[in-house]
Length: 337
Image (cartoon, rainbow, N blue to C red; front, side):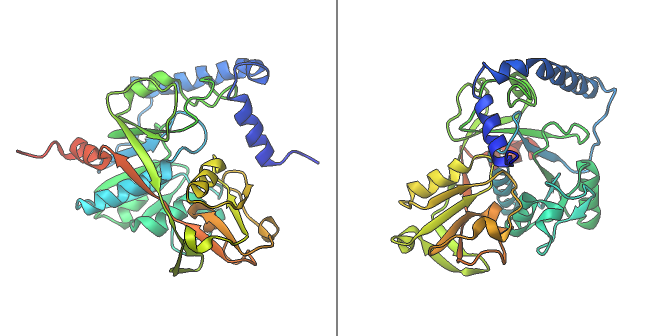
């Protein structure tokens, strides 16, 4: 039987935590990757290749490592806070899977067509969301459809230099830089020196080995109230779930983050990790018991599949100090005395 995508992801994560064995064998292709990535970056910095400049400012949320680190909840947080400050944000993303063509994400869009994270952003951000392999094209389509938009948030595009940006934010989770080597010997898309150019660094957890930066923000994901998939008006707390036979599913870059969060709420479900962006089928969640606990990202792909009730745990990002204020002052200047 061929290895599953989950076992491959877990194997890579194990390789990327060390500087021996297979990681060393991959240093030659890693060196080639680094040369090509550096050359591409240099072409944009020198002006030989030009990023597409939009008529509104662009805030880029991304990372220098492969895999998710909390970029989507951070993008959602910024969208909400900017709206509260009177701005009219729009969100663009590459999406995951699909044909890569530019399209607007609607409430009834298929996750396979637009991606699970853009669908989650559309459901919670209350602002327009467009996806496309070419983010600048997606952003122009968004601005044409919603001309009142006055700032673009780009989810996961730090290395997408074809779209010029005004603010760059790099996010790290508890994995940090891991072995600190470039792909495929390690997780790095770019070397740590790249962080000197970003405007802010956000820590989702307590990562080690990140170079010092003058503007560091700490993000905590908060959530302790579940809602029933398909009926958000029905809510449960962890206390309401006590004594039930529970299963927890997580198809995110670090499923352990979700399982640890459930443990912090006093819950002890049977945990089922899946690959990041996993396309669920009914057999994946054919469990016996009382209920299934799921992340919001997974929940958008679970409609109509489960025999058991699915309780979804929304999480909200809390930033310290105030990242939204930092972004607004970058865009508008500091408030007058």
